Image (cartoon, rainbow, N blue to C red; front, side):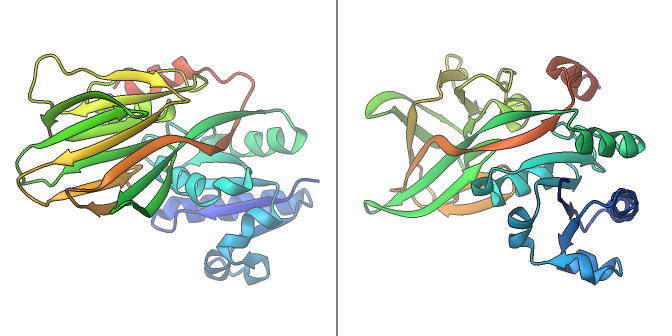
Amino acid sequence: MKRIGIIVNKSKPKAWIIARQIIRSLEHRNVKIVIDEFVAEQLGRSELGIPLFQIPKEADIIFALGGDGTLLGIARDFAPHNIPILGINVGNMGFLSESEPENLELAIDKVLSGQYYIEQRMMLEAQVVRNDAVIKQFIALNDVGIAKGAFSRMIEVIMFLEDKFLRSFKGDGLIIASPTGSTAYSLSAGGPIVTPDIDLILLTPICPHSLNVRPMVISGHSTIRTKLDATHDDLGLTIDGQLGFKLEIEDVITVKKSEYKTNLIRWHEHNFFEVVRRKLHN
């Protein structure tokens, strides 16, 4: 019997309601449940609670109750554990989620009976090198953003593919995206949509001040190295639009495919382009 870990976006009232429903449904089926200890206490089920970092060690599958942001955070935090994640959308877009609250019982039945497959999503690894030393390292599912501050002047982005000069441009910054991230920030900046099974990295300029600077696609086995030049120090790195880190002019940002993958639970009838039409044609 599968052991289910439940992670709740605490800021979404609907997620608490759905969590209670899932607990009742799983207990009716005699399924072992583990929950973040804070959430368990708030639900009056402290006996189910364990520290958040222990959940992937005690569960076979994660039920993520929230939106895309919730799933992105779980994917990063639990990346080393290689655990399947079922996104249950109680957010807005829910592009990465596979189930909706109105189909909750059907989703539980499919998971417990094994009527699903695992879709592996490529992740990115980013390093910030300062004075020839790695000072910060991140994992991203969607993208790594390098950008100026909101009120600063343009910056110059200088890119190298492996150790070979690729190009430079002036603008607001650069998005380095995975195939999963092709439908996120990169899309808003004019990048292409690519199917999530392709092994590649997207380079999408942010507001380039040039008519001949366009998004690029490089091999997923490549390493992209980026330097910045600017007349100010208002520079930053973002990870999946959720984590931030202040950059300095001499920093080198290196991005490549991570050794980790995100394992998303998908129904057999899942169709990527149907999701694109349903979620993005609004």
